Length: 210
Image 1 (cartoon, rainbow, N blue to C red):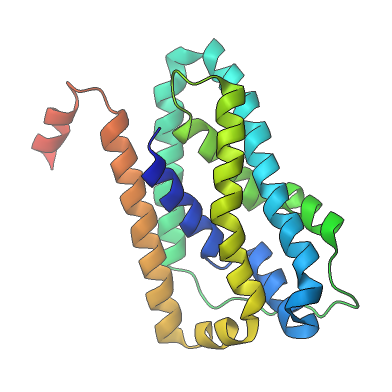
Image 2: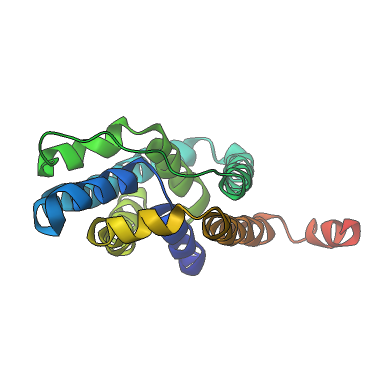
């Protein structure tokens, strides 16, 4: 398993602006860190569980269709490149509507399951990073633990410093630098994974084209 690439991917996906982080930032502004903590823990645990379940499910499925595993991995890396392009061109984060009360633990736990971006993220992790000879259940537990450890500090940063981050991202120059930096990290991860997944006899040909 390429642990460094997996952690890089999770770091980029967890710390960049998105529905989860914007909701937590807004909650942190309106209700403070303490009242936002239940939702934050629910989101982190929900994401970890979602990644684990998808890894077990797709791991067993891929074992039955191993002949197309390379094509699935290539499709996943293509999605990473497409996502990095979207990050580089992203605009300012939208304003969040004020809520009457902060989201609780159960709301945070279920929030990811209703977020299409998180579904794509979970599928991508399961397809691209699943070790070939690791049992799906073991991989699912491992991926869930790594996702929780990497994701929780990232979303805590948004919840704890919502006002400062939102004001910092309100500057077009800083927002573009932030998005381009995250996009470059994500694209580099995609190319790194592609180089490791392509058969050895294909790499010289690709190098010649480059």
